[in-house]
Image 1 (cartoon, helix red, strand yellow):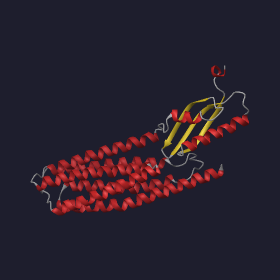
Image 2: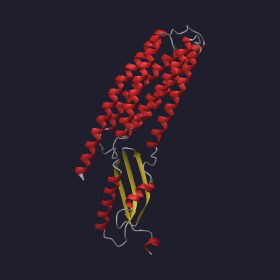
Image 3: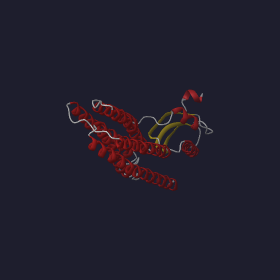
Amino acid sequence: MAGTRGKNLLGLLDRYSAVFRVLARVLVLNLAVAGAKLVLGYSTGAVSVISDGFHSLADSGSNVMAMIGLRASRMPPDQDHPYGHRKFETLTAGGISFFLALVVIEVARTALARFGGGTAPVVTPLSFVVMAGTVVVNLIVVRYEAGQGRALHSEVLLADAMHTRSDIFTSCGVFVSLFAIWAGYPILDPIAGLVIAVFISHTGLAIARQTSSVLADRAVIAEDDIRSVVMSVPEVVGCHQIRSRGSLDHTFLDLHVWLPAGMTLFEAHRLSHVVKDRLRERFPNVADAVIHIEPPPEEIRR
């Protein structure tokens, strides 16, 4: 058992290192995109571009937040945290939604202020080139980060990829705004800024829903799927009170297994380990399974 725990811990550390490397690479790209947008936005005076730049800067901020949370979540279980520190990654993913809320406030404030007047933005062909380049970079980031998030079962990578995906949609809105300014309709610039705020809000709510399901211990594995694995073990009469919680890559199970009433304690204990092994073989994401052994109900024994 000690050897198995050692292998599981080593696997978790390898996973955390892989997630950290992905976040570091994405951070560099997000900073480049945010810098390009903010320089363009402030040089031209386009509220929509500035708003999109802050959105991209939020991507970078969420990367840093995720890296800090990841460092905390990789710590092994201890006396105060017998289930480990894995939920720190979930908390970090939830923190991204809070960070987005601050961005929404800033974007909306800037857009509403522009309705009160101000100098019309100056749009040049370079504006479109810069925005097109940032969209291409974001597409690469989303595909890479989402793919790594699915492969590593990382909530924080998937949440961050979702965040960056919204950046692509807002950049498309910025393109429309720039064309409108080019055509002589600068009023559409602050309107586009407000539309971007709506997109960011939608992303933040989606991330908050995902992370809250983990923090609220929502079931991770379907009860019937667990039951089918348990019932595949010979001599198991049945099972009930099946529960699962945690995240996709770090799940905890507990269930009651019915074994023949006349079975010896030694044999019942042996079978419980067979059940646990089959569950972990079928669901590699299971960190631990607590199995309560009990005789079947009297009506079944008859």
